[in-house]
Length: 333
Image 1 (tube, rainbow, N blue to C red):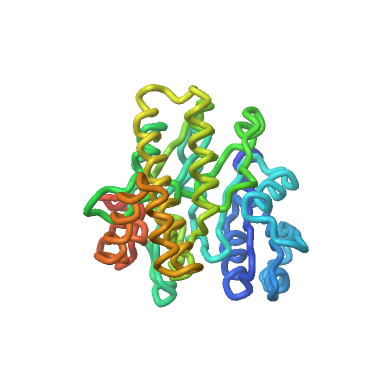
Image 2: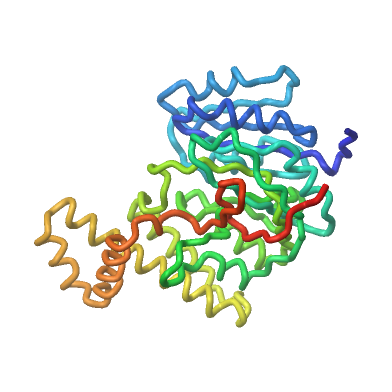
């Protein structure tokens, strides 16, 4: 397979204490012919993450491993890797996850995009041998309003977040608009970057074919995020709104999303007070912040009714895997 210069991909993997999975991630990236670079950033691991990544090297000279002595967070790790690499296309791979064979071939067959994302198959460890369904690509554009709507929870439905998408990004677009990950964020940093990219005019294409495998772990669910992480996400989105550059057709849904994040932050703050000082401290917090009481009560009720709603909304056809994007047609090829 001939890969042109503008089709070469740099895969970036930020990893912390991922010795058990980083090898699989690295091997899946190196197996793709379009991949010219794989940059692993060991973000202050206390285990053998660096050694496990090195053991997965295929000897092609494409693997670069960088180690941070102290943990700096995924945004800092990704920014450092982007600055240290050269390939014209940038793809993010989480250290727990992997690419299905042929992922980039499907994506690069599409034209006229700055960001392009494919479907994600969510699976448990027991499902790792399963192959994804062969959905037709059916490329479609994703605008700012639709992207934000795809990140808003709906009553009676599981959360479905398009911020989970792992797009391939054109380095030239990132550089032209001075786009990088906010290093003060450890939650929603992908969502926030994609919002700023769309505000900068990014042509964001989504295809339904599936090339990304995400391994679901109980300790990676969104309910485990720290209070300060939610606060940082709320502040970042509030700052975007305050800048006044969000088009009117998207501003309303962004304010709605921002309110949801604010409610989640209020609930986490309440639970922190309860854990640290008992029920009395939590009640005192609620009484001191009466505007937060509906968010606290609603959040507790939702958690009690259905803890599974913490998982992303997915769609499960015959293969048994769960998919982020609904896909109705199967590729006949």
